[in-house]
Image 1 (cartoon, helix red, strand yellow):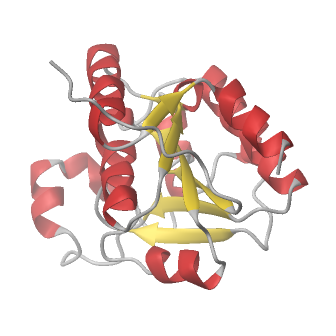
Image 2 (cartoon, rainbow, N blue to C red; image 1 turned 45 degrees about the horizontal axis):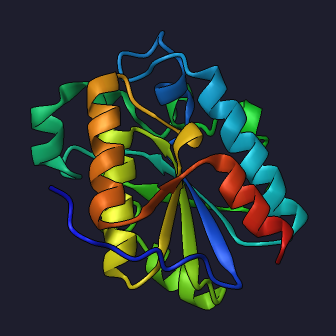
Length: 197
């Protein structure tokens, strides 16, 4: 049974984190990826709304520069070795049309926060709440949501803008995040909120 919880809501300056929407995760030709055009399209719609309001935008990608980086994680999942600096797989999906002024966080592990300077960048831009989207729901999205909450940010997860190769894991993690760490809502709820800022 889930615990009683409160919805805190978004603040006056939410930031959006687009977790690992890179070619290696949005293209089924990569062993790490799956075809999810509807999820990418939902992210683009949210991204355009953030851009229109000139709110902070953060992308993440995963890159390994040498064999010592995240070596236990990579021993467990050797396919991660595909994510090298010169690889097409690490590039943000072109459907999102990332702009030069939009931050990109290079990470090694699941969370967008762990081992990165994301927390400092959020503070520098006076972000007071987060909308977290991306791939995959049960992995990097969940880890980033948990760390976002642990950095004292209210977090919203628009369900149409997250995806996973495993649909059972996707559903279970959305339920669990909503029960404990974030507000899992429809994308329209976030768009309506942004329209009032």
